[in-house]
Amino acid sequence: MKTPRTVVLIDDDNIMRQMLRLVLNSADFQVVGEAGNGLDGIDICKKCKPDIVLLDIAMPKMDGLLALELILAMNPATKVIMASVESKKDKVLEAIRRGAVGFVVKPLNPATVLDRIESCFQRKDQPWPKD
Image (cartoon, rainbow, N blue to C red):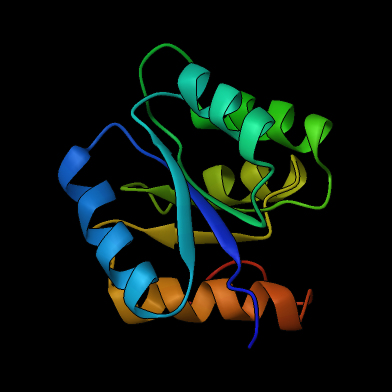
């Protein structure tokens, strides 16, 4: 039996985290931690060392872009996918420049999230959405 990939969800929207947890758990991922802000998210990632982090850009206490850098400094093998209501090219490029392997626009479509997660383990040529 294949060991499920581990995921940490970092988003200040509790409903968004609940939806993502349900979607990911039903798709054979294991959600090992959740946080409502970047600072708590860093602590969880330090303890859990997840395979994947779904990380919101705009959050209290610490924004997602700074959290992204700190998460990757602790564990460079972690795949971080950023989420934001903004799909401005500069935000996407900044996230990619700082080490994100993908970007999804809110409101999140569960199929898109799963596709982005799978693609970050298969290819590195297109980390952001084409649209």
